[in-house]
Image (cartoon, rainbow, N blue to C red; front, side, top):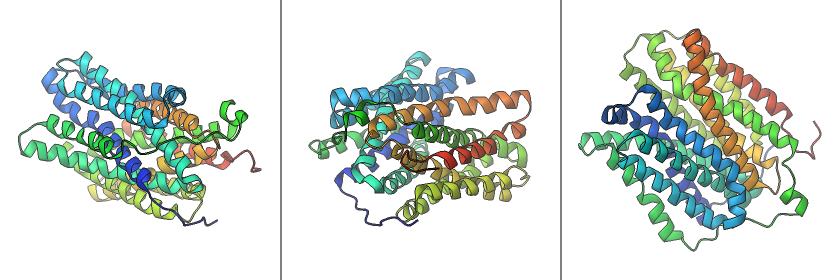
Length: 385
């Protein structure tokens, strides 16, 4: 089925894209700067890992509270207030003198970031209606590009000998300037169509979609967290080379989202999700047996193209399964996916300790298969299966 292609970006759309890119920049930052914090603060691997887990935990809390906070504060206030909370947490991470402060600060970053993410997703879904899939796909292209910006910023800061803190702090200019230029911009939630829709439970179809999205996110973060380690072991290259090969994965994510955002203008998100799952499965099939850098790079690129589309398309489809309840649905999506980010990489690590990393990574195709099952049953209540 082809969809209406009359998608238009306005000021609200662009500011949502910008703020989602800023969120993604800071979401990725703890995992990349922990190598510096471990040296500066003499942290163990376990304590270092808490910086990534803390962000996910804060986002889980945000997912459970975003709907209530929006009702209490209004969407525009919550949008800018959550940005401020994330900025405060970022400052704490940069200036924190000890692990309890830095871990606590990342938790605050996750709380503010999770609220911001839920608000952005709800705003784009409400603002663009049936074309929300296009907006969410394009927003996640911006998020993918921000990862490249982060790596470039950290590399530039190192080359200039100003340290990683300068690169992270420089990003705080984004919300300040965005607020100053758009402080009167209307970012309001539409009135609910009926009291039953506004206050009832989310439909069963939504929870099927949420379970599907949990599996998709789990597959993505298993690869994000462990692919470099696996490639280094499987191909017998150095750690630096293995990390360099991960540019194939992140490049695939950006390319996949660029293509996906174009296809979302014309095709049903469910069909695009099915295609993305197939591409991701093919990428794993190429990567897993690889013993040389070139096939590993090809596998990583295919994984990136497929996995890069799962989150934006999955969010669009899942939020659409709760018509009129975008903010509540978006908040629950943030909570579900944050729990997945927290749980999935740790599960792979535990399985790898008990068996091997090669064996443990078979959870990736297992998650993809479960997501495909969920996709087959994720249908709006009004549509018969």
